[in-house]
Length: 325
Ligand code: UFG
Image (cartoon, rainbow, N blue to C red; front, top):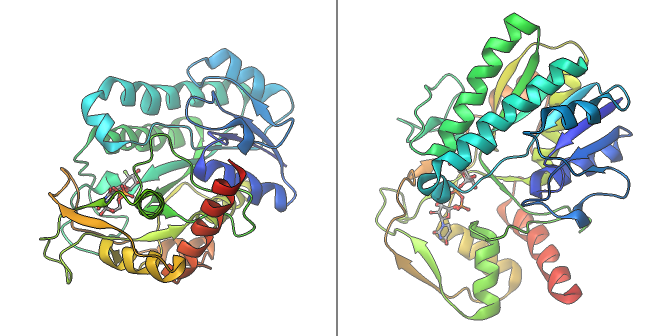
């Protein structure tokens, strides 16, 4: 079986490529390296193509028959999406449509799509279930909602089957240390906590006055390898003739920013310098998935359920990076 992975040079994509290769799949990676890294892609797999080039994507999909596509490639910064919405609608929505057009032309009709908890906006309650309404509060979330809606029409019209995985907070690194989180610029909490330890510059905690037990925001941190496995199960569901589905991809457990700081301190044995700053615009107080559907339908289960285990894999990767640079 041959799987094309867009955005396979990025954080979650590159971990999923490893999962697929480890399971014996043939893989090609379609990535323009605008955010991903060449060193994340094993030799021979990379097709350096931008998704908006429909003809080039079709040619890559037609080199040898591809059975399914896993589509990660996207811009992911919520803050930037509110300053430059055109970039996000272009790169996340229009480029996805270009990919789907190329897939139709190449006769590939199975897709796993990277969606996000941001499609729910500020949920009325937690845990969040898949039937909760679309209510994005930023352009990033809206750009993903639009793709989900395109896919809803493509199923009955083109018999195009898709699984949308709505990610909560992807975190951690490959337990064997082969890949990890390397965003440029980095906006995610765990790498920023490591940076604070390394530089001594305090990290800003965005808000200490939320109606949560310790006043800081709560998120559902899902280990990137568990998330990669969810993609594997999703693609296998489609390859087996399964129906289109949408799943939350989270663990079902929430941790606050302060709990994350404590975990990083336990794992690293070092103090994290931090200060409580103002709230960040558009941050929901609590985002926790009900992941029952993913567990029931795909038989998925998080292997990294303890926060310290997640942080430990991230810290191991961070140390190897510091040593190798
Ligand atoms: N945080 C801080 N200080 C920082 C960075 C983050 O306090 O310097 C806090 C945030 O307020 C949040 C938590 O740490 O409570 C996690 O923040 P991240 O920026 O790591 O992740 P988000 O929850 O904001 O974003 C994630 C994904 C996005 C996705 C969003 C969906 O990274 O791609 O969930 O809501 F859009």
